[in-house]
Length: 85
Image 1 (spheres, rainbow, N blue to C red):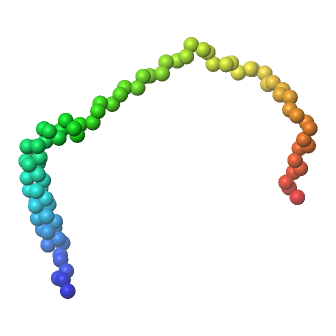
Image 2 (image 1 turned 45 degrees about the vertical axis):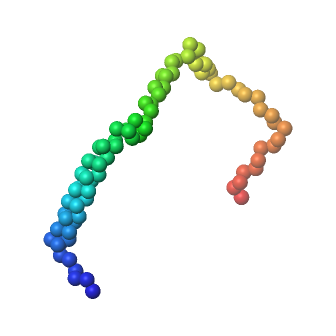
Image 3 (image 1 turned 90 degrees about the vertical axis):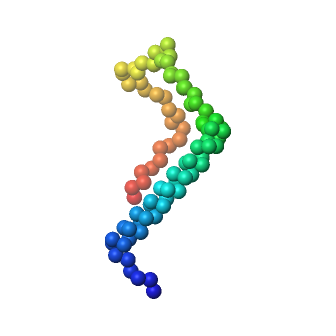
């Protein structure tokens, strides 16, 4: 069975892995810098198109009548009965 690690040992292990990863990233950036010029032209996204702002239409919105208006409805169908039994 593996020995249980203490807090300090866990921290040391994490920090050592982190430093190894940093070194690897630095080396990859150096290697990528040589070929980045050719890939950068292709990797760069196209500039975003500007969306034209909407202008207010010359029409004025319809006015709401101040007095209530009676609307004619079809009275052919009887109204449903109440659901309360």
